[in-house]
Length: 213
Ligand code: Z5A
Image 1 (cartoon, rainbow, N blue to C red):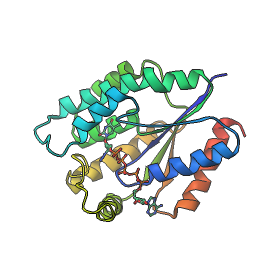
Image 2 (image 1 turned 180 degrees about the vertical axis):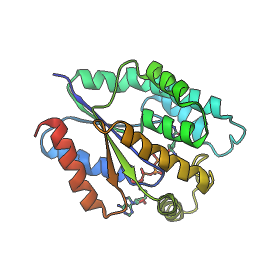
Image 3 (image 1 turned 30 degrees about the vertical axis):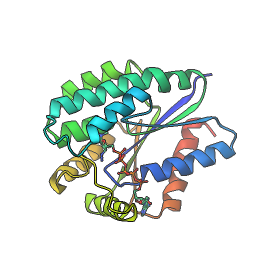
Image 4 (image 1 turned 60 degrees about the vertical axis):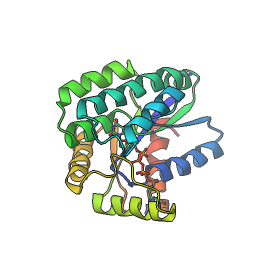
């Protein structure tokens, strides 16, 4: 039996990780086999690439290098983790995927979207999400949440992407909203400014529809 592939997208601090954990618990209570993974990352090679991408010391990284590294990490992740899990019939919950490349490197950095679509297609080799949940949040609130998280984590430094200016984060948010409008069948937009339990109820409803429950 083929599994289900669900991706979680949205601007920084939108609450994706929180919602993945909540959804995973609900699915496990229904005796579903769940795989949790993230991008960039999910395999040892991809986690090494993640280190390069998010290291705040790599200030000289140009936008094309960034786009190619995200794609390289993705290609490895798809073949080592995502495709095998789907083939085993598992439910894959992935924190970020191809839409982040369009929103951050396309809308945020200004790389040609047509080129990024081709790059994504090469990286995923046919592995497309069954459902993409886009958590929509004003970047002022999202970055505020990140700042708070870092303070709680005793002064931990923000990563290279989090350190971008607010204009960049606004373009990224708009990118996700445009994506949701252009692919309404796959992408569902979720108001991430509400309390976690209310958001979780909406997530469960959307996921049950895809699972036919
Ligand atoms: N990136 C890219 O540019 N291109 C690509 O192709 C890909 C990624 C795949 C990955 O960083 C970075 O890579 C990312 C995009 C870029 N940008 N940055 N940085 P990451 O994986 O480390 O970070 P992230 O995915 O952006 O996660 P995040 O910033 O930690 O946010 P989140 O997962 O969406 O949120 P969270 O951790 O669940 O919650 C953040 C805080 O808010 C936390 O303290 C929660 O307790 C709190 N929270 C959560 N939900 C709520 C609600 N509903 N109300 C109030 N507070 C809440």
